[in-house]
Amino acid sequence: MNTIMNGWFSEICPMWPGMALSVEIEELIYSKKSKFQQIDLYMTKTYGKMLVLDNIIQLTERDEFAYHEMMTHVPLFAHPNPERVLVVGGGDGGILREVARHDCVGQIDWCEIDPAVIEVARRFLPTMAKGFDDPRVRLHMEDGKKFVDDHKQSYDVIIVDSSDPIGPGKALFELPFYKALKASLKQGGIVATQGESFFIHTECVNNLTTITRQLFPVQAYSYMLVPSYPGGHLGICLASLGPEVKKPARPISTGMQQTLDYYSPEIHQASFVLPHFMTKGSNPDISPFPAKGEPCGQGSSVEVKIVQSANPLEIMALYRDAGWWKKEYDSDTSFLDTLVAGSTCFAAAFDRGTMVGMGRALSDGVSDAYIQDMVILRQYRKQGIGRRIIQALIHCLTEKKIDWIGLIATPGNQGFYAGMGFKPMEGHTPFVFKGAPEQIDHGSEE
Ligand code: SPD
Image (cartoon, rainbow, N blue to C red; front, side, top):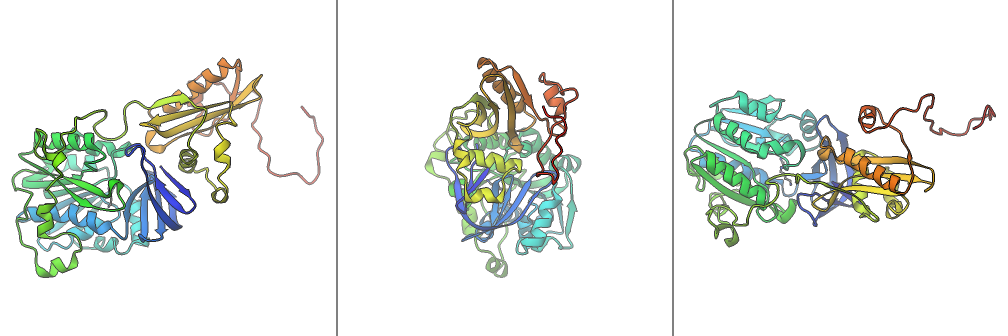
């Protein structure tokens, strides 16, 4: 989730609890909720344009080359003759741009589920979208897992340019997907997937490594430096059905080398050299930190509780996620400081200490109460968290002997509330004030 305060975007996420990267922004260039995610494009003060999906930074113009060059050229140069390549995800086009630099590649299948991301790159990120019209590219707009399942023994190299394993992206970090990737490779094929941070996502990295070692004869972990990703770096999980991946199998031409800014044969090899803490355990390629909790993505145990105070920045992030944030709030955010104290009961859901959902009840403290401002971060919906927030609020109110509890069910949520014991109020209609009428009608008053 993100917060924007005093012109700074802060990337707050349970996947990196207790820390947040902040980037100073100049303006929001584009914002849209697609069928799959919230897409925002900002102009930043010092990192050029910044693409944010579901409030997580995906790229900035200033440093994207590091990620895209390494994710692409490490597996492609490790393969002696990559002819057919599959890119899963990467709607912004960065990986495609890099794959297209390889003349030996004759066909590039590109499977991206969200056309809206492609559209943003085409309209606003011309340096990313360079490969879109390459005649070797075939675009398939569908679910990556399904596409891979349907294409057996088809590719020399598969690159999975995914977002983080939170919400729907989680499946791309799990065993069934890796089995499908393996089955989709041709003999001697190589797969490279977004491998998160070895400092921050140790369990996730351990899990990816365990999966790939179990399935593939060759497995290794590499990383690159990217200032705008949490921890300033990101890993690549590599697995191969034959070729060694730690060294380039082909030379790079002088012409191509001149077009690149991060990748070189030297850094290809160097990127597999990991800090000592990563190699002193039993697994020579990965961290010895003991795996704990969920291997990738959100924790299985989101905690819901009644709170007496909450971080205003986190409430702001929830409001933004719900689409309730108004531009005029930017200049005065002080109402956030008193939101919890001003509620009779305030319930919050936390994943590893980060607030991922909330709901509150307002009451006169004696007779009745109204539940409002229910919001769950998009990635955490459909997990029963809303139900638990409502239950916590009902419990809190009944403890205070308030047993008339009302709420307004937004469209599509009637069934949800009906299942929790709420019933439509026969003969009552919710009203909202739309401005004083010119002539006052003194009809019947309550
Ligand atoms: N924590 C962010 C990781 C983002 C990885 N994917 C980036 C997509 C850029 N094409």
